[in-house]
Length: 242
Figure 1 (cartoon, rainbow, N blue to C red):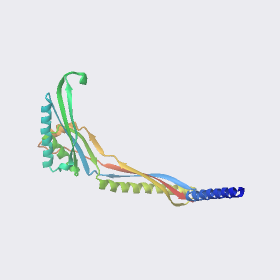
Figure 2 (figure 1 turned 45 degrees about the vertical axis):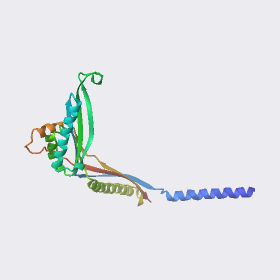
Figure 3 (figure 1 turned 45 degrees about the horizontal axis):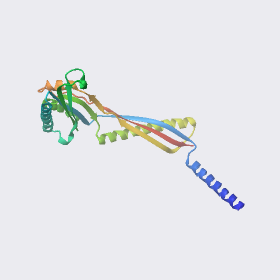
């Protein structure tokens, strides 16, 4: 019985030793870890514009009715200008009481009611931005809440791939420099982690556009410049060396 126990223990120890050898063989002893970044610039080919119609009246029903009429006029005007209705979406609708004094909600008497209806419009042609703003304002929109220039999915993917290629190239250049300084040779890639993204160009609360567009119905469209968008990518790569 004693010999049997010794034999079993010996087998267990042997198996553990073999597992340790396999793990050691799978894990390189010598590595270099480097990071690289890359960026490319592109022109936005999508824009979303958020409009609002705000009305106010002491009678909430009148405020709602006038708001509904104005927003319907805006939607119809945008559709007539060529904006597909499936590219227009209501994003907010609020009814807010306005009290007679500075006590706000603690006041017992409501002076008027403000009704606000917000609409988001998506355009596939950024050159139409100024024209569409003028159309909406002339039809009854009295707030331009935000303008956001973006990339289409196809363009974002293409720029992302270019940025990643640059990031990997820069990382490999750094790895080659380090390897040469250490007098070692890169034998392969162990791991690679990536991240990428871009920030849309956003303009918030363009109240001055409402005045400009409303006072120049017959003039040229409101000038809006999209600017450029920079897509960035970062990589962290671990190389095996010997």
